[in-house]
Structure formats: structure tokens, C-alpha cells
Image (cartoon, rainbow, N blue to C red):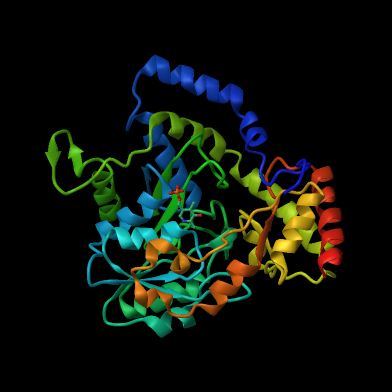
Length: 374
Ligand SMILES: *Cc1c(COP(=O)(O)O)cnc(C)c1O
């Protein structure tokens, strides 16, 4: 698109460079201990992450998608059951439902908050609905109070997809503490990212946590005793050690993201650009992404690229439009809000190590580009 990138979308090198000496020390400790799987680092990370989220238990797994899928499996969700998911989300939310053989029931998100609300979910509930997966898309917590109240009344379970919302808060509670369980991803680009893949489930349900500990480890909690059909979905010791180090900076990193979002919101308020929601609730968004909407999104993206500002689109196609789901005819049902989002959303650079000068540069570029494509 452009000759040179002056402001990258996300500078993962500088994010992790802050921890490099500590990472090296963690590797040296690992070499000295010689225990690489399900050892003391994973156990400590699980304790610390559960406490951070305000939950009784955290179970570390190999990635965010496994976190989603294993919870559905532990709940016995399978063929014949329906699971409600947002029409606009990363494809993993949908794939997790597909993997357990349950039926995906998509709903459009609220067009101003990007998250699903209880009215939309209520509309699609039926006798076969077993669970709903609200996604805290872009870092903003879905309206969990109403969703959980609805789910309780209907006897269905709530699985938060918190893969984009580490540390996000709603009414003083953290993402991951609202539903019956929550799935997190530690993919490198997330707000809390490993040096590779990783994931976790948080829950207050001790029996669920125990089942998940078996499911992630060949269905076993005691060596060579297999009580259920499980798999290998373990977080390794090294990643757990890295994540423990980075968890200590998560609140400061999210505060920096919030400050950048605040500058963008102020600077763009007079532009012909749809801004992300910024009521009081969004003050506590984890601001995983700063997503604007524009009817000429591709032209805006091109104009920003010409000014050295790298952007991304989350996501250019909704899951139901993907070839992978072509065999699910029922899913091509109309999702007008989701489809419009896919055509209009644009994610601007945001990250904990972004400097003020880079933020200013993005602001100038967006103001100029918005005028150019108006
Ligand atoms: C990243 C992400 C996932 C999947 O996490 P992985 O660790 O990449 O498997 C699931 N849901 C959402 C909303 C995500 O952003």
C-alpha cells in the first residue's frame, strides 16, 4: 500500500523488549529446574490470573480457541444443542461451537456498542439453546448484567469470549468474572500476550475447573488414569513464566491504551467518522482495538497508508460469509449489522508502547485522510 510505515499498527517488538532481561532470567530458571509442562509456573500463573480476574479458578490451556471449545465440551454441549454467538466476531468463537458438533445460532450485535445485548439473544432462544457466548469485542465488556439475568431465567449457560478483554471492567468487575466461565487468549497481539500461543479459562465453578484440568491433559488428573476423552491442550511452563511477568504490567498497559483512546476520541469528535462508543462504561474498556467506521473504509485506509499509518480491519468478512461455513445454509440468514460492520470498520494503531508523537501523527493523518475521502 505505502512505501514506508511511520506508525506501525502494533509494535510487538517494543512491547516485549521491556521484559527481555526478565524473560532471559525465566528461561535460565527453567533450564535449572528442567520441568517444562504443568509445573510450578503454570500453577502460579493460574493462581495469579484467577485473582486478577476476580475468579476462584483459572485453568491454563494451549490457546483461546481451545479455551472456548473445552468449556463447551465440559458442559456436555454437543449435537442437537444450540449455542448463541455474535454474527460479528473472530472466527474462533464460531469454530469452537462447530468443533463440539453443536448448532451455531448467530445474532447481530448492537450497532453502537459492537456487542450483543439481551434483547437480541432473547429473540433466538429456543428449547435447544444450551449456552450463549457474548464476545467482549475490541475490549469492551458486553452488557453482562442483563445477559446473565436472562440466561439464569432461561437455564442456559454463559461463556464469555474475553480473548480481547484482559483487564476490561464493567461496574467494578473484571471481564472473565461475569459468566459461568470465560475464555481468554494469550496470542502475542492480545492485551496480555505470550511469546507464542496460550489461553485460559476462568470460572468460580470448582467442578468445571477440575473437569477442564483433565480435558486439557488427555482426560487425566492422575498419571495413566484417564477418566474422560481429553486432549493435549496445555500451556507450557515457559509461556506461563513469561505471562506472569507481563501480567504485572497489564493494568499500566491498559491505562496507556485508555489514554491513547481518549486522545483519539477528543481529536476526532468533529469528523465524519463513526467513533467507538465512549460512555462511562467504555472508560473501562481494555481498548484492545480502536475501531472507527466509515462508509468509504478502503479509501480511508489507503489514504492513511499513504501517510505512513498502518491500519487493520477486524474483520473484513463475517464468519457466516466464510467458505468454511458454506455448508451451514441456515447461517446465511441475514445479519445486516454484522455485514455492515465488516464493510466499514477500521482499526487504528493503539498499544501500550505507542509514543505521544506517534499518537499525534495518527491524529494528523486521520484528520487529513477523513477530509480527503469525505
Ligand atoms: C484471539 C481470539 C480468539 C482465539 O484465540 P487464539 O488464542 O488465537 O486461539 C477467540 N476469540 C476472539 C474474540 C479472539 O479475538
